[in-house]
Image (cartoon, helix red, strand yellow):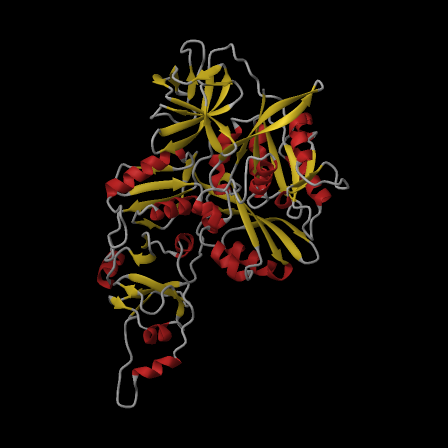
Length: 601
């Protein structure tokens, strides 16, 4: 049986998972409403967060006979913050399907994943998806992809890529736009034609590399590996080699291959296949598994781009601490972060203090971790995110990003103005009759806290995406915060009468009957000054004024804080309090006296 290994890569929302789902349904591996996005958070957000393995069996006519080919597919995330998931996957496969939206064309993450693929010598198959969009321009998208290949230094062989056109949602693919098609057979045939069978030297000693980790409640930690040589057997004693050369022994207790999205227990697996191995509780990504300690050398480490932002994770010590969380201690938070490090290779954590310094690839990367923790019952607080500063040859460096923005023409002025104030430099601009595409280079520091403002400025009609382009010279001071904090000076239950009077001062984060404590941030002030307020103050009742007249009060719906919006709006002297039930902003020092003492210092 031949084996083909491919990954599906693309910018966020260009249709990777839709195409993978359609392939699996056509091959009979999926039924009903099954999808590759199985995580609860992925379904809610409509994006892929974790790379996943699946496989299908497809008849391959060769030499006049029907031969079954196993196609291993890895569905990868499209958001730049989860780029570390893509980077390690690309080492385990032999080709990629590069999916590009027929209307939007190549976007920042398209460039990122394509660059990684070309550097590894892979020859992509280009899939121009969503050709049924009203504004789709498949030929222009294909031309833009070719220009991107050239710009990224593709070889002659890589430039000679094959293009397939598709409507992933409907499960349709075509080799030519004029062709009639009712399913994805043209795409599957292209994979068989263009992707070489995985090398299968089964006589050599076993050589496999771990590129992902999984967890089972009964089997514990499991390694997802690509077998490069030999035959891996259940119950076999093996050596685990680190890229640094260190060696330790181990034994395989269970061996699985992938069949659809399910795993299938097998007694052995051959070179070229992707498998899941149990029995190695301390295995890590990038390590090499082998049956011969002397002959087989450790494979090169799987490198991922370094983090760009950092923030502190602390035990929650607010007046409401411990009310909602199940895991609230520093030891429990430490253990959860240690577990996360085992599979989240884009994350770094410094455990040297009681305050854990966590570094990640972006606000969404950190927000997803926090969201998962709160759903698991953890309660904690985090500081404002800061960018990671480096120094090289005496020069201060900071991370920069390339930002691509698509907006209606009427909003381009306000976007250019706002990003200009944040040290963004407009590097390219393309206009059509109704929309503009703006490309900026901007310090990551300038982007922190901007996405919420962008939605307001473009009335929700703009699309913004970015990719990290490396560290460049420090851009100097950036003034971003145009609003101040509205801080509760009392504890109690917020009343509608008081909030009605406060809502003219700015934007509220809480509604009536919300319990508040001293030092809790209940909103922001439009004039940019911090203001201590009493949200629990009721109306003074007299013979002429009664509480029944409260019916005339109309409260503007509050802006409910999420983890992401909280990370965006919080000030440097604030914490974001995160519990299974609530997200609150608070001052690090709760009382005005404490805050004034710190300022005097």
